[in-house]
Image (cartoon, rainbow, N blue to C red; front, top):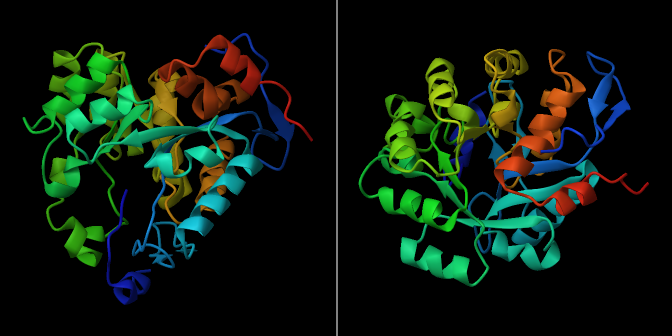
Length: 322
């Protein structure tokens, strides 16, 4: 999710590791315990310069909550990395992560997409690209299976690196009306996850994850996940913009269908670092999730998807320093 310059006044009006130990702590939650082990965030953004998001208050979410944005690139970086340390985020896929990589080289996985495929290839060869994402033709009214997008998926399969496909929700709720300069070409009917199927057939070794989890098209998403074992999802935005009950209904539906091993944590944190904690709490509050299921979502599924080494996983799962 990326927001360009917008009418702030209008915005404000609208109200694998299974044998390794599990990690949890006693806390106030529906099942009495919360996960407190390592976390991988599959969806973060870094910015530089005079981005119009700085200082912006996010319009009311479907929970009725708003969040005040940080004021500068330095504050964005510092407060996001502070959240990483606070919540034990050991890996994060960060679009434009090269901006933060020197400050957290063991944590940041650099992602990019808004460049020609040959530039992305060169960046990969130079060691400055680990993920293609977020790939977001949705904002231009283009489907993922449009011929203009094929080279990106082809490159990802060739290089053996993941690609994050942004479909829906994009922007804030009611964004088409609040932010027409960004979202005039977006359409809800263009948000079906089924647009990824021909890509999964054409590129059977593609490591693809749908950002924002394919909501609200859960039935179509389950059909895709049933047919294609290399399709994963992240739950970024869903875990803080939707009412908690709706998010839990979505999550439980995928769990009940047998896809709990392909759901990954994410936040889509841009200029609201506190959303990291909000997203974590939304999963920990799900009383239908066991600690093992939470560990899958927070860490194990992404570790497998990202092909982390056994040594790195073991390091991440060591007891956290007090």
